[in-house]
Image 1 (spheres, one colour):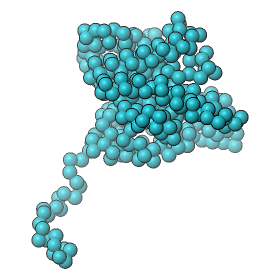
Image 2 (cartoon, rainbow, N blue to C red):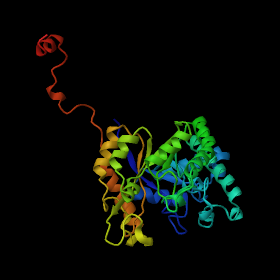
Image 3 (cartoon, rainbow, N blue to C red):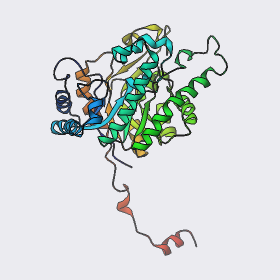
Length: 350
């Protein structure tokens, strides 16, 4: 067993145009003031991390890590959620996801995909250069518009989508292997990898690749009504990252899982700050500790009600209170009598 590291904070939801959220120095100093020991870093905003400079310059990397250390936080992982999304985009979502790419690539799906693959590859290499051994991402999606089988899906449509998705990711996974970095897919609605079954479909197509792993976030499983504790039992060897995000699911006579096209606050299933929803985090931390999870507990603030700064401050304390410092010995060692083969034989009547 290992003691989970933390608390850490995913910075994506906090980056903004005003201080302290508009610079690397400011946002890391602020995170430390909230009680965090680490930060998970998105790679789509050059104010926080310039991927091009990070790959090209050791001085830039040293400065980046040095600022974080001076402010009291470690860099836990990099994230390529937005770029990973663009590795595979169904045309129905082209307009919505164009905003994730540089303006010069908008309306050019082929060029956008090529750019996204290059960004993910760069983030893998930069992760290694920064001394990190795992990276968060989304898988992207080609089959997602066909989630519900009406009208009936054409035979072979889902298989072709997953074949294509695997073909696009396999070279990136091989690059990750060369660099000693796990690619941790956040299992998330809107991605083709949105539950255990779809992760397995993908894993089969990439030959059980050792670098294809999971970012575990129980909130997404609550909203799908998936057993988030059994999920840890099943995929414990593939869970390499952990987002601490809460959710609640309260169906009514009017709406359920699909939410009736309502906004977040009015949906039957909605995200909440840690401790305000229905996730049994005591059980989650216990299972991850039992199975030797060696990563960080990273708060991802997404709440339909609470102010983000309050959620961040409370989230640090919440994680700190849930981390289990593993015991160095068995609780009943005080009664141990030592090894006595003769006594064992007598006890067994041998």
